[in-house]
Image (tube, rainbow, N blue to C red; front, side, top):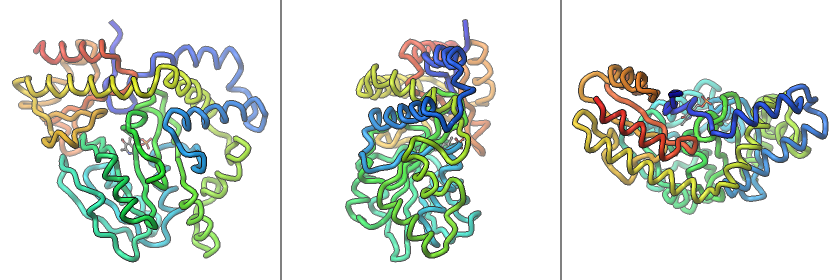
Length: 358
Ligand SMILES: *Cc1c(COP(=O)(O)O)cnc(C)c1O
């Protein structure tokens, strides 16, 4: 049997991807000039696909960059003169904070222990805070911030810019984009696509901030500044030669997911997550790392393993189920299981049987 990848990114490819790749080759998509109208139609389909699937407001811009990590840097450069505020709850929120330091800002942070959550709406925001950075689904720990708390945060602080990293919860996460100014993801996780593309959804408020910073002679970056991206996006192009294959695949997989139904994808994700958490609870050697069930991620499930997690990962691999090890300091003691739209209920049941086999 072919192995199934339950790794939290890159992960199992969405089932329609191989057909789309074959068609891209057959139709010579990869030799097209990115200044041609045939290319522009591909980018337009990708943008419209993202808008429709995720219900992005028409006033928000959709930009393509190279990765989730790049999106962190672009967010900071375009929305922050000096001070961003970061809630650090694991490795990816830590990276967002470190990115702000690396580009010369003076970010502030508060930290909660790995595996725990926080309420973004109760964070005291200082007068100087320009951007609040939230990692909605912390892939290193399996903690998910409830989206209604993000909405409440914007309501309490309407003038504060809010950035939300949804790299490992998209397209499952049902975010209100009116309550966020920069939302970003890459495609090798929940979209089940090859790595190499980042997507940014940017509010008019965030665009204004970028323009304001540029006017003040604060560097907002070069070819991937929001202003440069917006100029090209207005004609469905990018400043550089983009990852045409990835944009083509995204357009097609968005259409496939829309046809399948986002509501159905979300409901199935919740059902599969419930199966996984129950299997973990009932397993003699496993326990959920995230204790508070209201913040347990539905898309990245993290369990602590009694004994060595490496042995379990190897045994499951032998059974055709490739799962993730723990992240960083938890590499030896935890496992991480992705529950993305590419993982069918049948695949999840196969993984649970394999888990229970040992
Ligand atoms: C994977 C991940 C990233 C980094 O994305 P890349 O595309 O690998 O740069 C950022 N944030 C979160 C939450 C992630 O899971």
